[in-house]
Image (tube, rainbow, N blue to C red; front, side):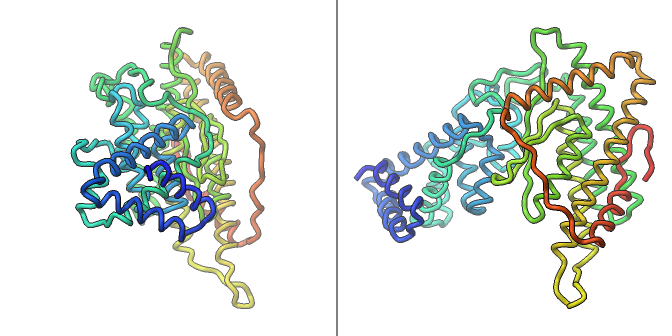
Length: 416
């Protein structure tokens, strides 16, 4: 029986949740991989099927980080490792300059990006490292089945092989040394936020976070002015989309926090709850600010929650979950208020100080309209939903207080 027929049987067994039938099929494929007479054909056929499944996933709108996230959410770390190998092989088919730089960065962050010579496949390398064929085939078939059943998403970037080299980007897919300003700023922001998250002294955390926010705010405004100067109606970079993970526990309040951060940074957000992520739409500098600030605030909130400990009701029962849910809801609510206040103050300062001050307000308004148009194009049927209300008064007040202590900072030095 050919491998394609066996995979069809395996998919049918997985669809039925028939573990016994699945094991029978996996055992047959594993025997083909282990036999010297059929080993090479079986392994290469299975690898080819997985590579083609990854190609199809790209066409459905999935990116490397999305696949890694969904595999981890539905399967586990061993299957995530296999997914990274599959994506590395698939993307290794294209010239580096024709792969979107965000994809390259995602794959590198996941530990991939270095294609293995075809003479030694990743499956054979894992077998040589001690994983038996039955386990390898079982995990591979399960990953293949998940890839084959992925739903369609919005295509946010050019597909591999179709991306054009950006201005200031080298043919190897990295940043051109001649224009390192943006990455240098973002590296400083990441460093400051990392220090804010690691210190146990609140005053130090406030100082680091204030410096990071000031850099992000100024970078965003400068990027808007630079874009105005460089876009002549014949090109330029418009709004983009970025998917950011929103995971349990307490995914609802986390989504509200991300919405607050996105809105304050002139971005829009759509939450795909069942897939574990939100799509944020905006201009690149603003998307960078959203992702970095959201991640840092989430770390700070989680650390405060851990320090608060557990909670019990008057009867001795646990109300820790209700307390934490309410805490995060209040934290997101208050952070949203403070972020909008800080953003407004920074824009007012930029208008007053910049030689382009009169042009900045209509420029930002026009960019907001572009973001709205792009979101409507990608999500024409999006609908609003409400997250369940907080029920724990102590958690709510504690969260508001923590948000007030979270120093956001701007170039004008807003104080907590």
